[in-house]
Length: 355
Ligand code: PHE
Image 1 (spheres, helix red, strand yellow):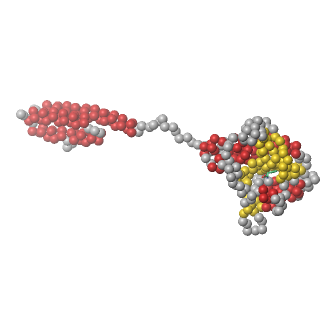
Image 2 (spheres, rainbow, N blue to C red):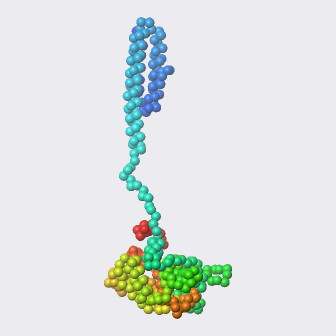
Image 3 (cartoon, rainbow, N blue to C red):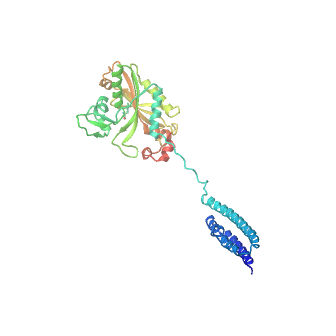
């Protein structure tokens, strides 16, 4: 066998082996290693070519041609294998990075006012539109504003009606968490008289109040709105008209109301206010205990002693006042069955009512 024949055979064998190896490469990195192994400077093909020097000059061109065709075949095989591996790797990546677009997106939840705050705002707004000024007072009160000025003297049995949270204080003033919003009557009247002299005023005072009560229908902290008007001709008829308008407006329906004689130290005469039951339209149900009426607030004409306590002449000035419980009104408006829902802060509840 001549040298050229054996070289030819070597080249053919190399070509076959290389093409088989290329097609079996598992990834592009392996394929690249094979490229160097066969076609690199120190590769198999270079080795084979070292034999060319031993050939007779006449035989060299033929072998040269064969070498070129082997290189070409190898390069073609490499191209095909590269393409296949690229395709395969792309496919693998697509599989690995597949997104499950059927998964529901995460919702961005927007905030809402707490139902009680919403109630305080809605109620205050109605009075605001009627011309009442919004006022606020401190949650930590003194006995003068919470009791004495409201015609509740120290020995008066009405002080027992409010189970009060008294606070420790360093001075002579006895402080407490206010048991109702009525002390804002005193503060607002004093402030008004100081700034404007004796003149009419109408005030709505929303706020937080505290009583030593805790059971299913009582929370130690709850909310009230105090409403009062002082003028030279303020009458009980005006009180009834304002109440009628307010309740119908808050509940978005024409509601009958009735006043029942009652007693509060700071009003005379005093009246409990009932409205037609919003659950059964007055027909009688569990909520109104089959009476058709719901007791919603306490009211009356401001007691002359209260007017006197801020220095007003009770012969000239008169006023009406009422105080309502916000939790109860919000519960009735939205059909909320349990007071505790307001304080548990379960987001599902807050989201359903809040706005
Ligand atoms: N302050 C009274 C209470 O908390 C409510 C009230 C206010 C009654 C004004 C009459 C007039 O029970």
